[in-house]
Image (tube, rainbow, N blue to C red; front, side, top):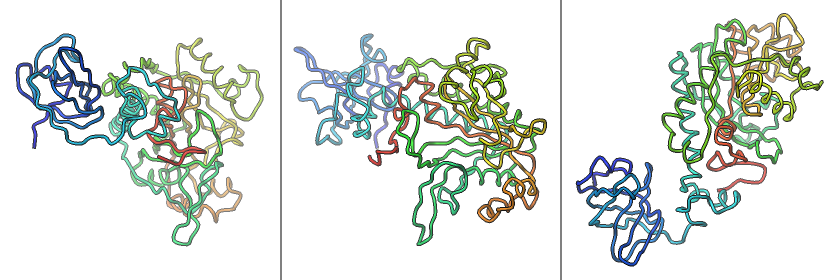
Length: 417
């Protein structure tokens, strides 16, 4: 067992003999000296080497003396090295991983994802995604939420209007879950405040830069609320916590991509759906992508905010479990959050009385019997939200395609790797 030092820690060991481990990122053979650049999870280390150099992407252990050199990564390098090759590649990567930009098209990157994602610029969005999830968890845990894990194989395809993936479940028809909505509502009756990070599946035949057939949903649900504005306040805290986590945990990735992180205002501006329609001059039951972009520009111009809540969507465009606005029953106590021109979060207050569900479903309760069971036993007023992780990361990083923010995307055409 070797005592390994990470590349980012080498400067702390100047003058000492240490061992590093990683991949050969680049070989440089000059007339008088040769170099290996070794990559590990924390960055790059330069090794002054001699003799035959192992191939790029070879896995190596290198033991050497940490010597100061201002021109080396981190200001130090390893000299007098002993290089042990642990494993060698049997073929080169599809493109040079050491180049400062990615010299490959997105299809090439996706086809060779297991090795292509080793490139620092391709790995960076995934680091930001991971930091965002850590911030989501930390913030909600600090607000008294309990993390739950709900089934992704369900018996009923009734959670939303989206198409579903049907599967054979031991001879019975089943489906991949479109969301954890029903389960997280039920768990409000257990823990009051719950959240989940998990995959959701949408068999929608979209082939766009903003849709995936499987994505990661960040869900939260909380009980004993007055209305949807309490949910919006929690979401505001979550966004701030996620961004703080990105700043702290993924600063290098943010810098590598030149990403600009937004500020979350103390109170995110909100506009009612009817006012949004008046502002944009449209009269449709939902917002179009062009309206989302216009409203985001308006919020930035008028309120200095890259975030905007649109509240009070028509009940006809919200799921049956949405609570209507008591003052305007045709509109909902629901909201969307727009961020940099795109709908990012959907949320709102839910119905919580059993009799309200009977009326909302017009007595057709059989498909929802398992869901409604919790409401037979008393549920508090509650609400929640769902945030798409890949969309969030794409907006943060400026990625042109959502597939750049997930390791192995699933869409209309792609089922591997």
